[in-house]
Image 1: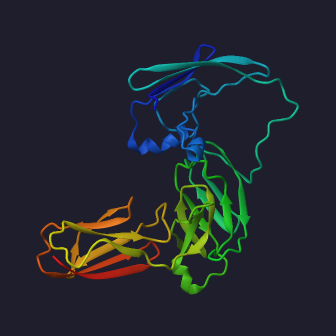
Image 2 (image 1 turned 90 degrees about the vertical axis):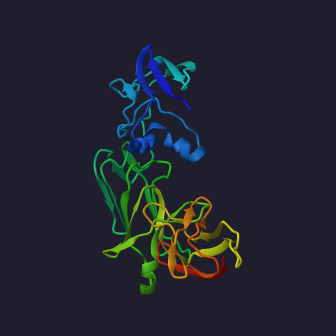
Image 3 (image 1 turned 30 degrees about the vertical axis):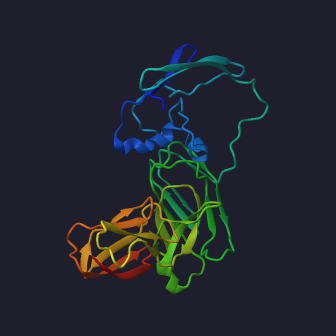
Amino acid sequence: GIYSLEFAAADSMRFAFRMDHFAAEQSRYLNAHLDYSEQSRNDSWVHRSFRLPGNALDFYQTDARQGRLRLAPGESLPLTFIVRDHHGNSSQLRTVVKRRATSSLPPSRPPYTYYLPYDEANIIDNGSIRAHFREGTFYEDVYLQYEMVAEASDGLYAPVHRLHRPDVPLHRYFDLQIRPNAIPHHLRPYALIAYCEDGKEPVSYGGEWVDGKLRAPVRKFGNYTIMVDTVAPVVVAHRFQRDMRGWEAFSFKITDNFPTAGKANTLRFRAEVDGQWILMEYDLRTDRLFHKFDGRISRGKHQLRLRVQDDRGNERVVEREFVR
């Protein structure tokens, strides 16, 4: 990637940055430094040559307009971009930008439902959904598009609430509350706020009941509804057999029907051998749960008990006998 960028208009420096270092807690502001929409759709790193108002990164040198240009109708400006890598190699691009003559049509924005200033707290509440955005959630003003769609699909216990577009980044979690349709009392403990994206499996953000609505912190625009999860995790022996004399480790693969996001719990587990807790390590990337024999389990016959629980409390217990 690039190390620095300089942007000049009419030979006057307008914007520059040098990515020497920044604090770890500022790393999420890279969503404002990059063209997040381009990155999320095409996995491309496109650096902005202007600064969004809610971007708190401090490695910029800019003019008073934060790199933005203002041109009169018909005016043109020569532009120069210089980029360098960490070894000092550089490339330069020169081009010209020109504003077209005054149009008879006034500038317009796409249709929107709510205007949300970036430097204020904002609340949306229409009775069916409540979204509370704290100050500092947005990097720029948001012209939010919202639609409520009454879905008749099995497994949905609320309308689908389409909250803007997932290619618009959010810096902070926002508090989301959804009022359900009729949901049986015995299913309420298993209800969750689900993020639904076309062509992908729903993602659980968990949730808790507050004043008749299901509430969860989320950090992404998109489609949300209420679903339930009553299915226990799946536990499959990956590298395990009754006779493990001479083995260095054993492992299981654990999966669930709902991937989780936000502050919902990933799979929780506890393993015991002969009633005594043992250390199990979890590789989230491969869904593998494994134990390395370290001499604490003596030779002979033993009983393993593995308990795996998902975010909604569904539990699977596996018991196996083995010889060490």
